[in-house]
Image (cartoon, rainbow, N blue to C red):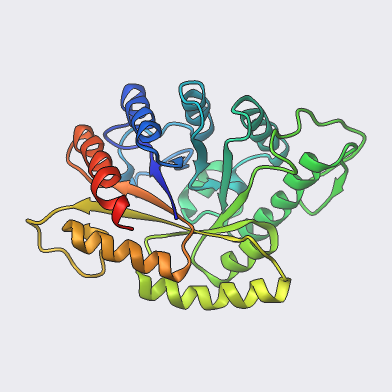
Length: 291
């Protein structure tokens, strides 16, 4: 099982120095990946993200220049928000400059007010996502890319650079609905879920495995992003699988591993950024060896 760390590209720790401290520490401690989230604007009705939300790809470019080997992931890029030709260019450039470290997590989005602010039809986000995924692959793999769809068409163009990693960076599709799972198996190399308990994940994985068998797809990654907090003082629900004493966290991770989770993306809950760094160290030295 591989482990990733979320970076504070939004919220109270959204600061370049904090981002770099966490990224450098994660690489030094042996974590396999770093992850950023995505929103372009935050409507007044959804202010829980904090005042600042840095662009995910620019943040990862900054981090790539200050790290060496650790993978760089998006959890997740909201695909309908972005022109797919421009996004393909940005991702392939980042993958080339980082020498193949990109993991492209994508999703269809959920915040209707943000879609409205960007002028994108909310009720068409699923089919837009599907078409844009197809466009990314055409641009990354074909010498003379051409495409004709409902939302975009192009021909007689060249597209360079191609990604460093061939045929393209791994695509992990986010979302918990059956449609999102279908999209992940159809277009992606992995499914990226968020916050599911082992019991809920087990139910979802039944459908994942059914589709994988149908599509005869191998080497498919099951990833999960989840909160982690080492704490013995709070009365924490059993539903918070990775919050509580170390023993509970170890048991929770083992359950996810037994279910087939390949990549666990950890969002450390702490009152301070220094607390996040301390939790990362404790995880690396005391928890991971027990998994």
